[in-house]
Structure formats: C-alpha cells, structure tokens
Amino acid sequence: MLSTENKVNLLNLSRSEMESFFTDLGEKGFRAPQVFKWIYQQGVDDFDAMTNLSKNLRAKLKEIAEIRTPKIIMQQCSEEDGTHKWVLQVDSGNHIEMVFIPGQGRGTLCVSSQIGCALACSFCSTAQQGFNRNLTTAEIIGQLWVAGRALGLDPKGQRIISNVVMMGMGEPLLNFDNVVKAMDLMMDDFSYGLSKRRVTLSTAGVVPALDRLQQVSDVSLAVSLHAPNDALRNELVPLNRKYPIKALLLACKRYVGDDRRRVTFEYVMLEGVNDSVQHAFELVKLLKNVPAKVNLIPFNPFPSTQYQCSSQEVINQFRDILMQNDLVTITRKTRGDDIDAACGQLVGKVMDRTKRNKQKAVMTVSGIY
Ligand code: SAH
Image 1 (tube, rainbow, N blue to C red):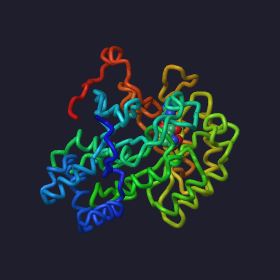
Image 2 (image 1 turned 90 degrees about the horizontal axis):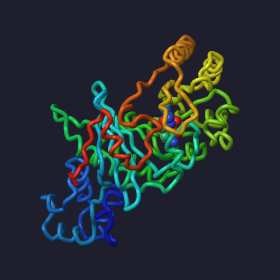
Image 3 (image 1 turned 30 degrees about the vertical axis):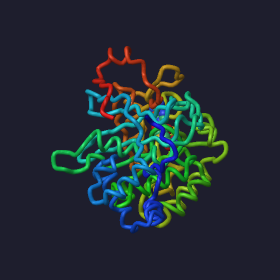
C-alpha cells in the first residue's frame, strides 16, 4: 500500500520541523535527531525498531505518523560496469527511475526531482514523456533511503553512496522548495551527512531560481549548456529563449561568488550539431571569465531521436581544443548503456520486460518491500 490516510510522513520533515512535531506531542526536541538516525542512518521504517523511544511514544507514532518511501518495482544491474538502475513506484500511477554509478572510491546516486519534465530539450528522452508532477521531499530523500537499503554497506562498513547528483528526471529548480529541503536533509549530520561538495544540482538554467538557490544553499552546481551560442541553444534547450546564455553565465558567477569552486558545464556531443572545431573555440571564448569546468557527455540515443553521437575522434578533438585553452575538461564515460540508465534515458516507466530479458542486463523483479 502506497497511500495511507492522513498520517504525517516523517520523510517530509526537516530537522527543525521534526523537532516541532515532537514538542507538539509534549516530547523533548532531541527525539528528532534520534529518529533521524533511525530512519536515515539505520534504514529503519518500523517504529517498533526504535528501541530508545518509549513504548508509548512508539505506539503514538504508529497512530499518527509513517515512514513512507518509494517502492522498488524493478531493478537492473549493468554487467558492463556495475551501474544499477531502479524503477520506483511513487504513487498508484507513477514511476520514476534512479541510477547508482559505482566509481573508484566513490559511488554516485543520480536522483530524480520530478515525474517527467516540462523543459522539452530536443535531445532528452525524459522530455518525450511530458511533465506530470513535482516529487515531494519524501519522494526525493526517499530515493537515497531506498538505494542505501538496497546497496547496503561496503566491506569496510562505509556508506556506498558518497555523492548525489540531482541529474535524474526533471528540472530540480522548478521544484525548488522540495528539492532544497531534500538536499538539506542529505547534508544533515544526523542523516546522511554528505558535504556540499558531494551534492550537485544540475539545471538547464532557471536564472531567478538559481539566484534564490544562492541565498539558501551551497551545493555544487552543474549547468546543462550544450551550445556555445543562443541560436543553437534555443533549439536544443528551449528554456534558453527565456534565460539566454549571457544571463545564465552571470547567474553562475553570482552563485559561486568568491568561493573558489567551479561550475560544471555539461555539453552533450551531438554529431554535426554542436561538435565542430568552431563550436569548441566559441565555447572557450564564452567561458573565458567564468570559473568553469566542462563535462563532455557522449549523446545517448533513444528510439525516436533525430540525433547521433559524435565520433570518438571528434569528441577527442573537441576536448583537446578546450584543454589547450585552459578549460578543465572531462569526457564522461557512458554508463549503464546496456540497461538504458544513461543520461536522457530515464523514461520512468516499466520497460517492456520481455524485450529487457533478451538483453545482457541482469534483471530482478524485487519483492523486498
Ligand atoms: N533538468 C536538469 C537535470 C537533468 S540532468 C538539467 O537539464 O540539467 C541530465 C543531464 O543529462 C543533463 O545535462 C542533460 O542535458 C543530459 N542529457 C539529457 N539527455 C541526454 C542524452 N540523450 N544523452 C546524453 N545526455 C543527455
């Protein structure tokens, strides 16, 4: 059962809200960090397991509160690189996807912020799906909870999820309040305690919301740039017509301020569209006075797309031009390609399972929860 009547889902509460929740019940505020630890650090969703709470309080909590997380309905693991993808059910009709990417000494969870997306970027398969609704704070932080429980601890007892990127489905800045609250929860010492450097919000460039973010948060910033001029970016990222590149770059500078952190600019490599030598030089010029690093993303094709990925040779040439001109550039490896978990492929619906079975991925339909 996903929905329950009128109970407070504790995953929707910030720490101070949870403190008020307990003081309203006549309890001490320190119940909040205690319960935080149970939920987020121990992965508990059963009040009876919270043994440092009195029996009476546990009974009361069962009556009025719940710990309701998204439910895993499918999980896949890439044989190629260990990338995991989960399809999660958030309400009776909606699914989202979440991806875990293991790396050297780190593990990155790619989290969704909306069901679908309203931005209609021409090269992104989530866009095909249109927009359904914003995720709640509980549905966002609940993704970490679900992945943490599914992945467990590594052999040294360390948490496997060391980094979070808000790069799944949706535009996080268009779900501002819930996303900020969920990111604050990720960074809370009594919860996952991630540092601001290890939480990255990726945006297509909602300029006013970026300024608002600067006021209330300090997470790392990634911007989906994808084109070095407005004419081309208008085509690829229609939001650019509202907030053109110049305004976006100024907002990026305001965001980092005097901090020495750089903004990551994502640039998807589309054959014959944005990948020429001239585009590379244009990008160098554009980012000259911006504290930037560039992440070149090989385009991941999907069935109805008009685009193709640039060749490795072209990507390398593009990268070399940027690097020769002092732009720190990383070419992102395509991950989880065999399970459609790569960028832009998070279509958030249960895939045709028969078709899936024919592929290399190992798939298990989970009955854990
Ligand atoms: N709306 C936010 C969050 C999504 S992040 C944003 O635009 O930043 C997902 C990243 O993957 C973005 O940089 C997006 O532009 C990129 N992406 C989308 N579709 C892709 C595709 N088919 N191949 C490669 N990258 C893609």
